[in-house]
Amino acid sequence: MDKFIQDEIAYFLDLDEEEEVLLSQKVTEMVNWHRTSMLPSYAAYLTNIADKLDAGRYGSDDISMDLANGRSLIEETVIGLTPYASKFLMRHQTVEDIEFMEKRMKTRRQERLEQLSQPEDILYEERLERLMLNFDRFLGNLNDAQVVLLEIHAREIVGDSRVRLNNRTQRQKIFIKFLRKQPTELEITAYLNKLLLRGHVIVNPAHEAFSEVTLNRFKLLLVNMLAISSPAQRDKIISKLREYADDFKAISS
Image 1 (cartoon, one colour):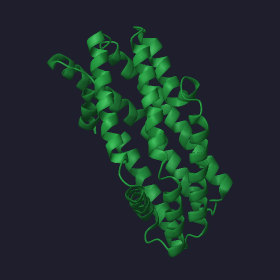
Image 2 (cartoon, one colour):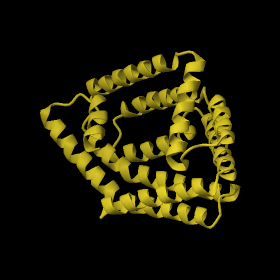
Image 3 (tube, rainbow, N blue to C red):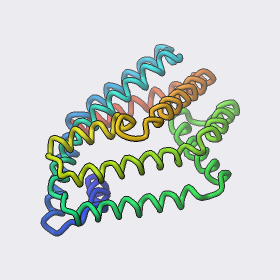
Image 4 (tube, rainbow, N blue to C red):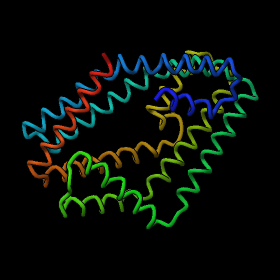
């Protein structure tokens, strides 16, 4: 995991040998913080969902609360990680550094655009396959009605990736513009938190409505999938959630 994160960050930065060593140290610190500070919370979150499922509490209100709690955990994670990013970004604010970063962002964007330029039917099949794999991991073999729900959902969201790419592009551009102002470390942290958690306040305000529609659509899918699930499927979900929770607790200790 450390290597993957380090490679992803290094892709956007023009690093010399000394800076690569420093990046490795910072990534290790960041991963250690996440392991000790967040994994126990993730474990408690998954255990709570498993307990609710075991008690037959998987209606619309229950799922809404689970998703809200999940969003809170994401926010806590982001706020905990951004100071690490800010410390490193402070060392990369030259004109050349920012131009390098901007060029790499454009390259990644073009790669993603090429992926999304495939015919819609292919994108739909890829999305459906990912949905099937993810739900199969938790539920086991899906029944016909559940497959139909996933097919409908996959068709409804087939264009969402383009919307997200457009939003990410706008956020990247506004962030590059912000970095050119030579902000302080605290200013970078505050801006990153706002951009990542409430980016619609800074740019592309319409994305807030898109995000809410997307979340509500996913919530409805979960509610409907669970409503027609078998006892055996729910037992498997409970077992899988508890297994992940135990893994998180073991890793964090």
